[in-house]
Structure formats: structure tokens, C-alpha cells
Length: 186
Length: 186
Image 1 (cartoon, each protein chain N blue to C red):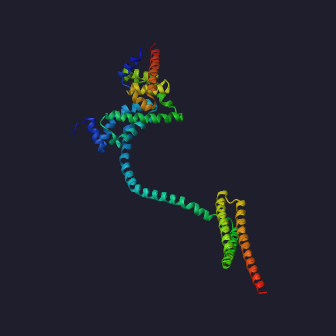
Image 2: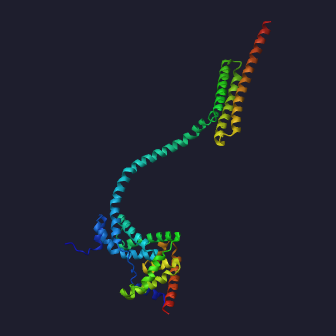
Image 3: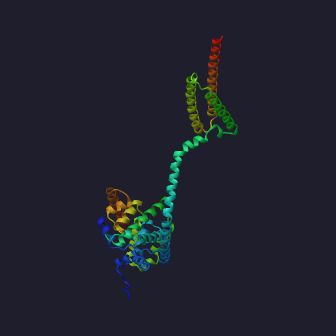
């Protein structure tokens, strides 16, 4: 019997050989985190799923270029983030706004989601809603910094801005988010 | 609440609250299967076509380069009075025939006495011919302008006039000599 829980390194090794079962297993492990990352950046559920799956596919095809100096998850996430930002810019350019998703979230807030995942979900939704109401670059930089956990250097690389610019933007964004949250608590 | 609190707030929360639409795994599996079958075929096709395309491209390049070298002379050859209309072709043939005839006549008259005048005439002819080459280029550049056509016909006439002049002069010399000769006899 082969053990069901395999170490991620073994899985990556098997992916390098093109093992489809290993690829599906990796998908199983990471899809949720990657989907959420894409969703937070694009704000579009179908788009997020597409990006997430395409990112997996491109990760599998260029798995040769994955070096062991970062974790597989971080490497994959970076692909997702980059793809998401490209897609997001495209959506923004076309002026397409996802009303449906926003409405869905509203419904979720008041609906059944509340009772099943207690406080965490409730708080998260509140915070995400507040972040969403911020200015566009504030929203993106804060999402990258606070939720995805990138540092300033990585963010200025991802968003293609200068380091100083990035720092000020994030601290201002944090400030305005704090105010919004305080306002909400009152 | 301070900015640090915002940081802490994010640390303790799990933001991955969204789930992709149901059936995402099946959709991904389909994509994965397409991908794993797709690239192999694609790779083969590319491997087969790459050298062929390379050769084709180099041929094309060679043609273009040759074309660049040959084109000016070729197009200059094509642009002549004859290329404008059948009437012009007739005109050109008429003039070139006439010039050739006169040149032959001039050649026949070659003798030590007339050599200087014939050589001079040939030099003049060369100049006129160079003029004509220039006009051919102009004809191409101007898109068959009437003035250029006129100039070309005039050029032909000038050449014929020149040759006629020379021939009459030679005739004069000859008669002069004959007369002198006769005078001597008398």
C-alpha cells in the first residue's frame, strides 16, 4: 500500500516526470489558496477559477524552471498573482464590473454562511468588504501585503512601482483601512 | 486601534474563505488531459516544421536581398517609352532603328580626316545617352509623367539631329576635298 499523504517534494518530483495523479494531488492541495488569491485580486469568480487552473497548468509545463530555493506553494502563488494582475488590468481596461459577484457576497453575508463558519468568516468578509471599498491601488497593495504576505520589495516588483512609492502607498492604505474598520466598530 | 493592530488582525485570520464553483476539479482534469496530449503533438509539429520554416525563411530573405539588388536595374529596364503604350513602343523602335542606321552610316564614313569629328560626335552621343538613362529613372519616379515622355522623345530627336549634323559635316568635308581635288586637276 502506498501512503496516501505524500510529501510535497515527492509530488513535485513525480510532476517533473509528468505523473498526472501527482498533478491532481497537487491541485487538490493548493487549489483553494490559489483560487482565493486570484479571487481577491480579480474580484471575479469565473475569472479566478480560470486563472487558478491556467496557473497550475503552466506550473506543470514549466516545472523544470522551479528551483528548490523557494517552496512550491510560493512559486505557484507567484504565478497566480502575476496572472491575476494581468487579468485584472485587462478587466479594468474593458470596464467590466462584476456586479453578480458583489451581489452574491451580500447575500452570503446575511445568509447561511454566517452560522457555519463562525467568527472567522464573518470578520474576514467584513474586512474584505472594507478593503474592496478602498482606492484601487490601495486595495491591491494591501491585499498583497496583508493577506498574501508579500514584503515591500516583492510588491514593488509585482506592481512595478518604486520602493519608496510602495512603502508610502501601503502605509496610507493601512491607515485608511484602519479608519474604516474603526468607523465600522462604532 | 493602531496600524500594528491591523497587522495582527490579519495574522490570525484565515482569508481563504471562497470556494470555486462546483465541478472545478473535473474541469481542471479535462484541461490537464488536453494539455498533456496537446503539447506532445505540438512539439512534434514544431520539431518537424522548424527546420523547414527556417529554410523557407532564409530563402525568402535571400530573395528579398536579391530583389533589392536587382530591382532598381530591372525596374529601370522595364520603364522605357515602350512600357507606356504600343504607340510609344513604335516611336521608340523607330527612333532606335534610325539612330542605329545613322551610327552605321557614321561608322562607314570613318577616315583619318573625319576621325576627330566622329569621336566628338560619339562623345556627345554618350552624354545624351546618359541623359536618357536619367530620364528613364525620372519616368519611374514620376509615374510616367507626360513631361518626362516628351523629354525622352526630344532626347531621341537630339541624338538624330546630332548624327545628321555630323553626317552633313562629313559630307561637306568630302565635297570640299573633292572640289579641292578637282580644283587641283583644273
